[in-house]
Length: 194
Image (cartoon, rainbow, N blue to C red; front, side, top):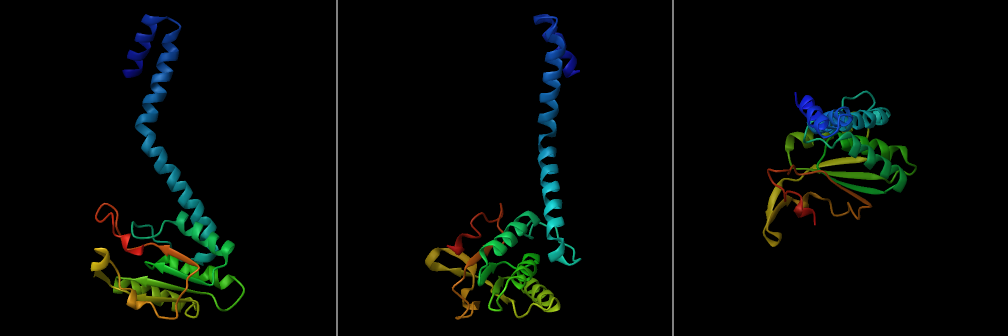
């Protein structure tokens, strides 16, 4: 109906403009309605491409796609940076699938002195990540420690308890901040990293 109306208005202006007006309006209308769907589709395709590239590192394991998990595109970028920059020590804030994939990346690099230390504030996820690291035989590369969230009065913020970081752990060549969960619930959740 809207396309017909646009064509009628175009015909009143100039008869040959009816088709052009109808097509232009229909295209704009469809793009406006489907705009979000197209961007969602683009994201879904990009995530699938990243999962495909990460497949050798995943070694058949499912990649959990939930809001708390680092998206596959981001994990792929981090893995590419590991292969390019060849860091000796990585600090990851917030553990999960990315911990295991980064540990496998480090395992591909020459030199036995590469490591990742991952802080996790949720005890269940810390245990789950540590179990997966051990099961993959990467306990010598990755360590996941429980670092509960605590109040820091000096910065007026809540952040991971940095006392959980072993004294000899740093300095770090690469830091990945993937926690704690923030978003609209707590937009300054990651402020403490500074």
